Length: 430
Ligand SMILES: *[C@@H]1O[C@H](CO)[C@@H](O)[C@H](O)[C@H]1NC(C)=O
Ligand SMILES: *[C@@H]1O[C@H](CO)[C@@H](O)[C@H](O)[C@H]1NC(C)=O
Image (cartoon, rainbow, N blue to C red; front, side, top):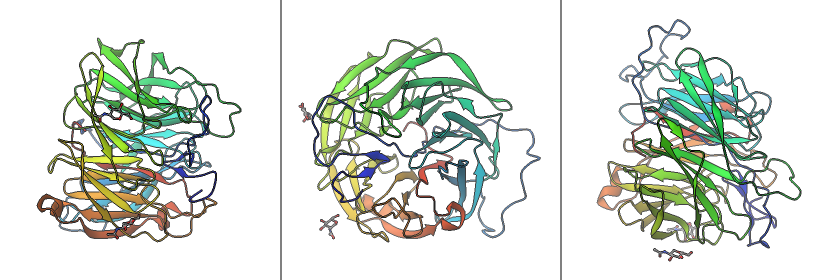
């Protein structure tokens, strides 16, 4: 993969090193991803199944947590760790089975007062209830539910609609949605939102044509990124929501020049959407204006110097910056959220050259980056880690300061598919 001829498996996808002949789809092997929806205040009556508080951290409320998915094909798991209130540090990791199967190098999850995990290996979605007093304690609700397609890679949750929607990126691509009940879990809703299928020839292994799914902040539309085949531009799909249900007629917008529209981040309103493009030699990202009709205007092509695979980004509303990480190199790119322009870049160190971050989230002033040091055969050659940075210095033009390298080998083991990142609680409107 890294540096090899036929190329980067980054963002969990096979990204061609050069623009291939157009016309048919590449083998995009999607990775695991963890998204986080907004915090809701579902107060549970009792939590009989939860163990007592973790030892240590006596001055911490213990009410913040970070989640990763290990994507184990034999049985998928969420890894949860406590986040310190005071300094953002991680501690006390635990592992909780999702009840479904992962797919090597492939996942997704999201939440609210729930954590959702897509089980790409058996085409199901799991939901957990978060104990607000101890959010590393997760209770699986009901059984994993079929996503009605293949290879779910991402999930979005709207608290306002009480609806979770999983994006299938493989055969039968499209979106399945569920009502969420805090005791029974997921009830499938009676519709499936198709994504125009691009026939692969042949489909070798996991094929993914879609990447990310999000509700807009007001829950009036659902958005998904659909990758272009080779040199073709990709698409942004949006389904307007009428009377609590996504319309079966999407607005389909071709994003000129964006071959791999990947992650989506709303920047505080329904109209501003940041999309990354991890295609090698591309600009790397763009800032879009979304009209209420679903029409899209390009506000800025965000040129990320030297970008290799700008898969994931996270928005920090407090400082109005975006942090874009690169799966192929240890560089954090800081983007001004008003202009969509790069303001600075920060190099960090990883245990293996040419590896970067597999997902990222900002929680308050802390930036979390998941790094999985693998070699070209996708074998783990160092411990997977979550790197923690204090980004408050960025406000005065200084660089992020290192807080912690949190080794997750003990809980995650040697599974190179571990990926995705989510935090609880999470700010709204991203
Ligand atoms: C961004 O790039 C695309 C082509 O890749 C071009 O069509 C568009 O005009 C550019 N937009 C801006 C705002 O620069
Ligand atoms: C940061 O890393 C990139 C390669 O990833 C390199 O080209 C650049 O020189 C580095 N910058 C600094 C300041 O070390």
